[in-house]
Image 1: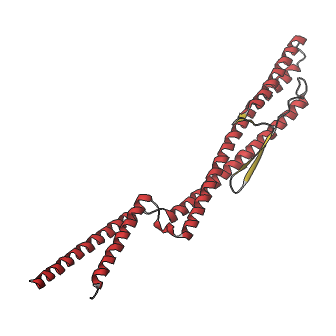
Image 2 (image 1 turned 90 degrees about the vertical axis):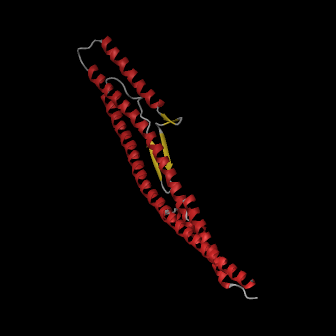
Image 3 (image 1 turned 30 degrees about the vertical axis):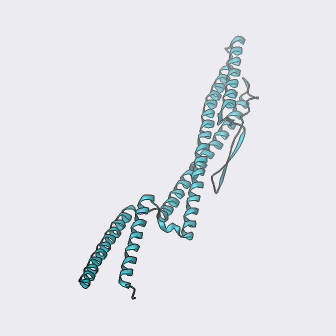
Length: 249
């Protein structure tokens, strides 16, 4: 008995288009290319996504540290204003027109301001940890940034001693510079990581994500060809059946 090769070929043709139709539909539903079943491509795509995830965490770490430094900077702004008040009181106390009671009042106000400065720095915290007098090292993934927030010494401040006020102002400016440098370093790293992460995700998307419009078009084409093949096969079966019935009559 001879096998009908034409019918077998037609059935294979129909099955192939049915599979292509299902693949296109799966792409539309999942948004992922089925080619990622290829081990090499899957490995590359996973590496890209891993890099993007790590960079995303690095960006979050950097943003948290910027917020922390902003708190320290805001505290220093208040301390700086109070330091200006101390300098003003110091100038006021050097007036020969003041009596002893008035100078005592100025001294009391001076000491109160120093205490307020200490309280402001000791209460400055982020996520439960004090900020001043600490060194912070943060991982951004492939790099690290270290920032020191110095503890300002107010123990030598006294009314009538201009030198100690000058030294304190210098240490205050140095602290501003340290914090500002740290904020600039974090901001620069955030911008760099954002750019790199965007490019990495774009590369991943190019490899892993489906062109929906193309997949819809493929689905329609494969569906049409499958239906056409099925119609042709049905028509052929009808003709064959007619011939068989004619032979039996």
